[in-house]
Image (cartoon, rainbow, N blue to C red; front, side, top):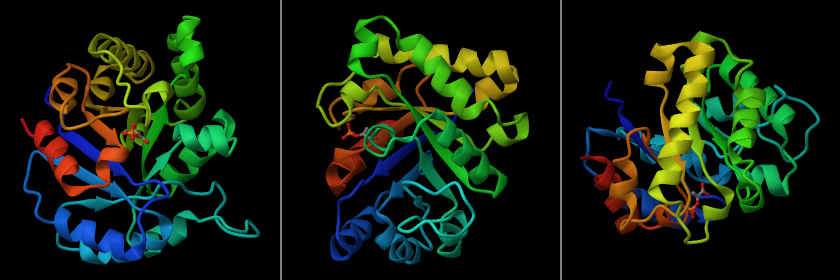
Length: 251
Ligand code: PEP
């Protein structure tokens, strides 16, 4: 089964409003029908990004969301707030949220459930630290992240989930995982979905790779059997790199 590829840019805590506007105006030139393109600007730039991309196929998504609907959670952003500015998808469980903001499996599964229950699509990130891989624990760890984070969702809900496998040691380091490491983990993840939800879901679910994807390695990574595109950090911050990565997914 052919799954449409996704290239999603995670801008993290980068880009002022003016910088975002400039980049978005360049991104509007990207031409492809074969790739779902998404960008995740910071919260302060979402509203503007949505209006600039109103008639474009590029989707604006959030980097995070709170698990409660509303209330006394100073500094947090709710699902309702995101939807009110035209954002209908978010990233959940990025390793930087797990590591620097102590978001554990139980918080993340709550966020995932709340988001899906309220009609937000999610890109759910998982990934192991280098120390876990060196101990040979990486498959077990990924399995637990998926079971704990996502397997509370039912078969209909899981259709609104995209998974991003991002080995933590490859994020922002310039060190990409080897192709065989990427493919074997993606295959393993797809099998988990097969065992839990059946073969239709496992064939449909899109599994992105993230971790130092650049124009020079995107094509070979995206050509791996179980890789359905990428979550891109650093290289999503300039037009020519991001465009080259989108074109690599276009093939
Ligand atoms: C990311 O932050 O999700 C990521 C993959 O970053 P980078 O592409 O910079 O490694």
